[in-house]
Amino acid sequence: MRKSLGTISLTLFIGFLIGAILGQVIGLFITDQTSVAYKLFVKSVDPGLPQMTWNLVVVEITFGIQFKFNFMSVVGAFIATQFMRWYR
Image (tube, rainbow, N blue to C red):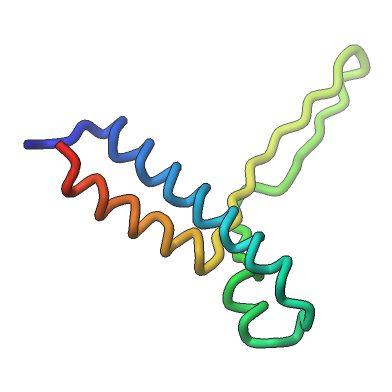
């Protein structure tokens, strides 16, 4: 049975979100910010477009999008895809 693109996208998004939240919760219990565990679970890579502001005198428009990926968000996405694989 084939999954739709929307189902796959939603599953990956939920997996990334749950993983990122778990990474932040684990980070609450790690006090040493120079430790390897902190760098693994909490530190993130932030790809995206930088914030850009246009001031048009009448209106000011701000654009930008940024994603935060850490190790736990990737693990969460992997687990979510495994659940999706077995869900009908």
